[in-house]
Length: 296
Image (cartoon, rainbow, N blue to C red):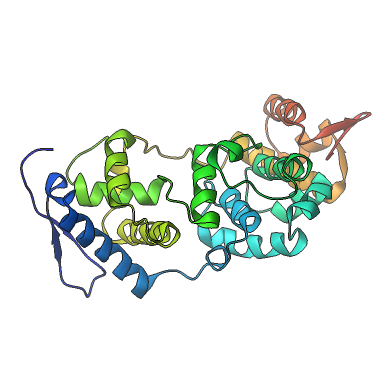
């Protein structure tokens, strides 16, 4: 890990600097305890009050995880409440037409997530007795669920000590243990995440880590940019993602449109609109009704 160095962190602008020793030293028991105390003290003082943190309902937590993928918390909050109001459990979501699910999802983008979440609910009803599984292996068998989402559900719904990593958590560990380094791979972070895991309450610990990461991004130029996984998101304006969203919104309003109507209303190049439509058809997000395109 290299020679010992001092890394300074802040609770916020008004707090005193708190030195944390090098990565090699900090993996000792006293270093682990000190690191945990810094993170948990910050959470006790400044932790965010979010609706998916006030429940252990695995379905509601699953919905929040789907919504939070590549979407900021402020955008998710009102849509989450509306979505849970309309589809309070897997049974309600499974039996709902996809069009209604897309209506409730509208504004979050990445409509394939809504489609995958509905398929996930259908599978839960058909094969899991209506209950969200409590093991990572079983969760990863569900549509649209990868390793991160599976582990997040295990942690936040079932309080299991799984190893979770995402952008805010990366920010914390890079800030404390890899200061000054760039292109830090997740493989270098994972031993630290495992060693410092607060096993008495993993749910609280990961909420605390994420909130500390949010604070760092606001005050320390986002340490997660030094992750090997960091990549700038391509602009939404003018992208195929924008065209996809425009098409879905138009179909929600007009029920069915010809390809010519969609091209005219999007104002985009005909070949691009046709290519996006073909992709949506292949994904099952839209269907053909004679000469028109409609939602399933």
